[in-house]
Every structure is written in C-alpha cells, then in structure tokens.
Image 1 (tube, one colour):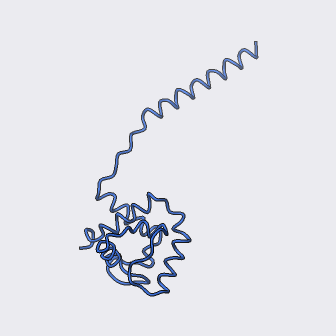
Image 2 (cartoon, one colour):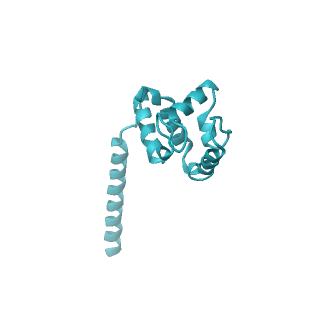
Image 3 (cartoon, rainbow, N blue to C red):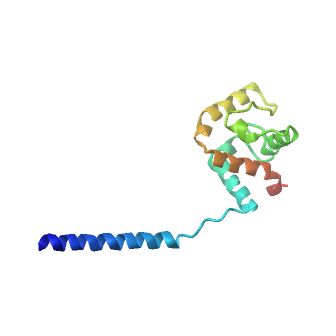
Length: 134
C-alpha cells in the first residue's frame, strides 16, 4: 500500500510540473526584430562594451583612426569591415605599422571571441555613426 501511495504522489508531482512547464512556454512572448535605430544603439553599446572605444573615437584620432575616418575609407573602396574584423581581409585604412600590429593582435586575440552576429551589430553601428554624430 505504501508503495502505491509513493507512486501516486510521485506521479501527481510529475504531472503538475509538466503542466507548469507547458504553461510557461505558452506565455513566453515571441521576440520581434529590432528596428534600425535600436540596432544602431545596440551597436554603439557593443562597440563600447567590447572595448573598441579604447582605441577608436567617433571623430578624432585616439590610439587608432576615428570611426568616421575608417568608414569613409571602407565606403570609398566598397570594402567589408566585418571581414577585416574576422581576420579575413587586410587592413585598408592608412595607418602606421605599429597600429596595424596592434589591431592584428586584437583580431587574433579578443575579437576571436566575438560572434559573427555581434560583429555585424558593431559594423552596423560604425556604418551609421554619422547619423548619431552628424
């Protein structure tokens, strides 16, 4: 009799938990795609969070060229900044050999840990930085 009661109790607990799980799944809202402005702001935040801002300012030269200067060159040459950040393209912005070495070190280092999606978000911000800072 005890075995039957233990089995019945376990079954009731298990069935209640599975009903709760189904309820939770049903009320989870579907995530909508971000609008363009939100994507740019997210890219701005990631640019700072991923430490790109330590070397690159929006308008002025820091340790490396400004975002506006970088993107002017990439637009002019119709080049892919994401390919460069992944280490799949050579640098095209005119900088010193020591700056290229630093950026290559970053590409081989911490940029390897940044997902393709994150790189796309950062690149989107860089492409639209002139909209935020005209």
